[in-house]
Length: 304
Image (cartoon, rainbow, N blue to C red; front, side, top):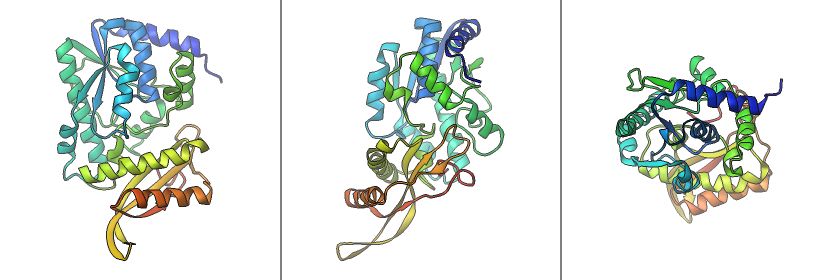
């Protein structure tokens, strides 16, 4: 059954007004879910809402500055805590542990910001597939199963909790959000941390950020549901006449309707060749590039 977008918007605004008595914080990541949530909450609460963008150092190239620019009219607060996230992730290899650490660090930053403004409500852009995957034990979403068990917030409000991604996009268009937000590719809450198999380091973050930018640049015209690069580990290669022991980068591009299932895209061979030569040519520490053909299931869309 088609969703009644206007009714949803009015109901969500009413719910937020009913639930939030004082001031509220919203975690704004720049993704379509949190952006829609922030606009709805801003309409409901006005300046009683403080949108907080946590600059975790796990975002894509140039993304943090762009998000700050796009949402400054909502009174966005940008908190630079890159070292804090990296320190917390040092030595951690297990994907679930990484997600939980990222989730907890986000919440602690939100709590600190909430104390500054005297608010005790956190609004989040959690959507239906996030809840299904977390509750089904597939993987913890940092804003659902990744939440710490003790928090200072009295209320956590999730206005989009029953929507799928394509429905959220409909709401975004109805709210008049710019295309770069309404049509933005899904991006994981833990960011590049789950595009690095194993421990997160500065070196790996820099490499995966650059590789990711190349993939997006080359693949966006094919309109993927999601397209990105991930670091898998190290392998032997040859550059010039020298043996190198460098990073293996996996390229992933999928089609999907609701993220519950996905298929690998059949990209033209010359596009894959160009991506491979650009990544190995422009990023000296990468020895080889592979293309992931696995559908979901059995693979998830992200690597971790």
